[in-house]
Structure formats: structure tokens, C-alpha cells
Length: 98
Image 1 (cartoon, helix red, strand yellow):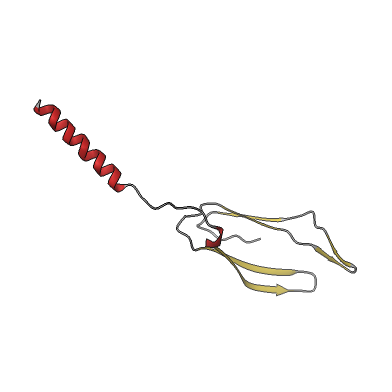
Image 2: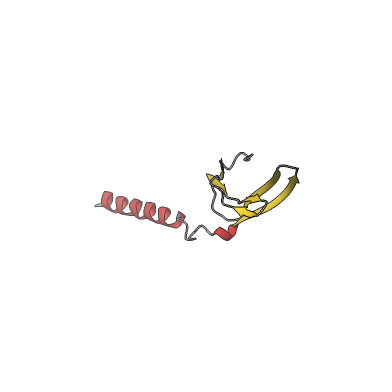
């Protein structure tokens, strides 16, 4: 009988400890937490170069980032579609150079 009471108390304490350590905050991804800023730009005769900084101001850690950029091609008569895209992949520990 005493053994059963001890086991019941032990199990109750374990359940209490586990449930009290659980987080009650619900973390959800919010795209407003991602800030994209133009750091610098370089314009040459035949090219344009941009440095872009992406900051995560949210509570969730982003472990893998895929950045896609599509841009039109400027012609003498205006613009035309571009079948190409620039893709940058990174982890949170290193920058991406495109």
C-alpha cells in the first residue's frame, strides 16, 4: 500500500513538472518579421549590382533561406520578359553573394 502511494506521488510530481515546463506561447511565422533592405547599389555601363540585407526580427529562427529575384530585361523599345531568375540559398550562419 505504501509503495502504491509513493508511486502515485512520484508520477504526479513528474506529470506536474512536465506540464509546468511546457510553453504556453504559440509561435507562428509572420512575414512582417522579415525585413529586406537595400544596403548599396552599383551601376555600371552594362550592369547593376545590389547588396540586400535580410533580417529576421521575429522569435522563430529561420534555418534555411531561399531568395528568388525576377527582373525584366530593358530593351530600346521598353521591357521584355526574362526567363531567368536569381536564386540564393543560405543557412543562418553565412551570407549569400549572388
